[in-house]
Image (tube, rainbow, N blue to C red):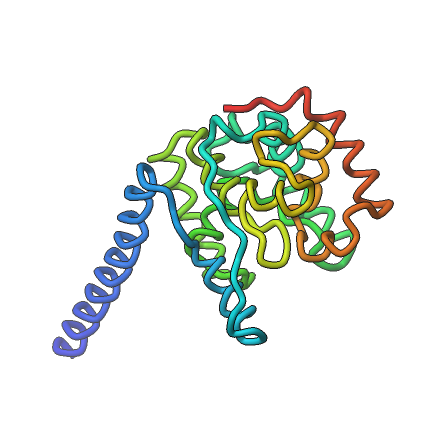
Length: 231
């Protein structure tokens, strides 16, 4: 019996150490990317693999643009559309999550997520789109790391440069050139709002970026942008 207990202790210790080492791996990248700009995120790699399974020569549109060069209108629009409490929360919008749960319950299916920009970035940098309890738990841990080690400006900068904006389109600069043939530095308020509206489902909305729904949501985001606080 004593040998069994001792074995279980060793197995438990090994598992704990394995988890700590795994989290340390994530932490190391979070520290590195505080200063160095990420090239390709894990989410980009997943999309690239999907694209190359259909076309081996598939490439992505992605070009890094420093924070100060990105249109302030786009920053306001994205915050207004995706996370209006971004500068105030510590990674999680509990009220937003509660509202999302209520909305999903009424609809009988998942129609809202309630994820903050920080949570979305954690997923994009390291994880898959799979909606599993494990992925959500790991996302929460990485979100805490980002919020503890990065300032809001850096979180928003990396998010805007890595988020998906259509089939093979990643980051604000690629999106601005894809949809409006301008740099992300030159985006107008209306163009910024339209791009922000696309974020929840960019590959769906890009098929009809001037649909009645996108037009209506763009008008709403334009009205909210003046209240969005930008880091």
